[in-house]
Image (cartoon, rainbow, N blue to C red; front, side, top):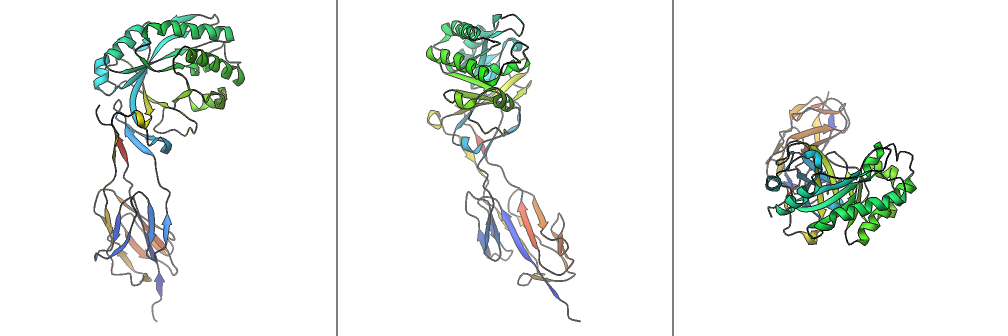
Length: 368
């Protein structure tokens, strides 16, 4: 009895800038640079969403972090935030290890029943030595106010502490309200009051000639502030993950804590600063994957058809780095294993997809 034929269509999905060709050298399709596109042999393109995000490696812990696509034009600077808990800091060594900026706690209100403001014991030493090492500096105050009068006192205390360092303070003054989630004095405060207090503090700081900013985790920001009312001021996002799902506006991202950073004897918080592109002294170098070629070789396919019961290898190869993966749209018709070996198991049609593991786009900051 004459053997029936099984129809199949091969789909090759490639990353940006890749050229697809057969083993004989015949070009099938060329992917457009800057796009991820799937091309079928029947000339019908199927678009994949383009990943516009940027990834950088932290100089402090060596891990990779993914930045939101809308920030890709910004220069990404590396920095830290510190307080007296870190003890003595070797700021010159910190600078050499990649610290470009630092937020330094100037003071705080004690988490207690009584309203008591304190000065960070290492503030003066830290801000002077960091600036002397060529590191841009900002400051933050950790409040615990439950009345507008107390907020005014905290703002006045902050301005008093900063007065002697106005000339070297080039980054914002931050209302570090996030810590209040653990304070008994403030646990019953609603969003309206918290927002009102943040505005009062930051407006006072702004009126004194400084740039003011607030901070918080995604959860804290969503549950404690009406952020639309704070749009006049910048945001320092606290989200210790390799990427953040927060969709609000932010200029700084506190992404991790580490004890591996040079110059620090304890655990330091690591931050990114998304500088406006116009402020960049030198543009970031974008490293993209080199164009690669995927080839396949099989004599079992004729006009997109193979015989029932056939077993063969696609013989697919990549000219560059990246492991190939294979997937069948209907394994009851065509099955394919991790090495690209195909078995024709039934009658009908199926699509086999070959993908090369995506290469990442990395942005490295040039030494300044």
